[in-house]
Image (cartoon, rainbow, N blue to C red; front, side):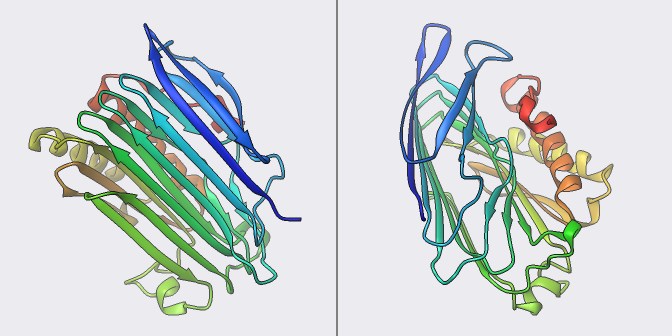
Length: 276
């Protein structure tokens, strides 16, 4: 059996509170709306009860953040693309963030099992004065179980229209890409963290964010395979390669915490599901 699941999230600011109205079809739902830090920031955990994505499955998330709202969206565990019998699996996210709103898109990692055929697409549209912090973490195979990603295909698409387009294809049989020092250099996990605005970020603000990321990286075990840059005035990026997800997650979480305080004056409030 294959699944076609769709989840629509509409956030709006009501006085001092961000509230969400959600509609779903198929097995993709909001576990709960939580307010562990303030009523202005709505934390949502998205769940896919079948627990994995197989060939032929289509999962779609559509989110709209109304003016002045703030949502932090995460997941309780890895999104797992399992071995395909020939059909591709699709996961897509599309979000529109209106003026003055903030989005934090922070799902746990996407794991590609041997033989998976997967498409992962994300698009974030930010209006003037809207901002977001997002990350994407990809893990190939199951190193702890001795399962290599030596066959299969993973296609990635992350887009902020007019600002940034990141596209990549990872083929399990492409040893030049996976093992070359100009590619993944033998690593099997990659993380990308970004802070983006619908309007240009000042040069001083971008430099402060980059300095913070570089400071975190300098004291971390993954410093040799991490780098940060600002390819556009509306964007700062950190990209990291690692042999395993755990250290990569540690580095991204520490940088997210620094960026959150620098950009928004908010201390980190990590979702409880990250610690279970």
